Length: 166
Image 1 (cartoon, rainbow, N blue to C red):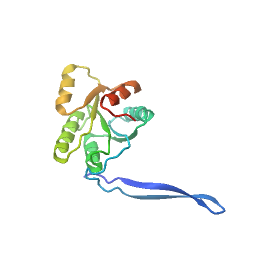
Image 2: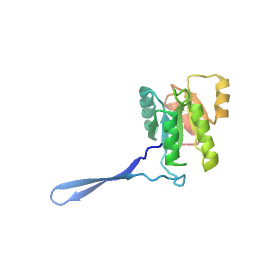
Image 3: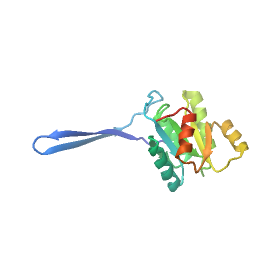
Image 4: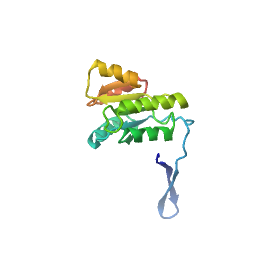
């Protein structure tokens, strides 16, 4: 079962004779059902290794993207389905996740898209540079494959290639 996510707002109001006051309101985010398309460039990272996830998050934030993350393919699929088509601009997934590989995740997303519409670019990160794996990636629904140790310039080029600019 997918978790419900929270949304809300933070407001600051001038308070007479005492400076200012802030208010925070939170509520459950309603499921979008694929209807809402966001102009915000939000990337979903799927990576089980905390250090790798944090490093990739820093690179993507440097490029100006908002970043959310999942530790498993199942968690990522659940987040994608709950948030709906158009919420994420792309997914960057480790190709070799322990429970459900990035390739399996891509297949399940493509199957979901056939039934519900939409298209989400999926970038797989792997250590392999073999052309056989790149062919396999395309068959599994991967949009683009890059090296796991990609620097900021490689990530920028990858997003340019799939027409996602911040």
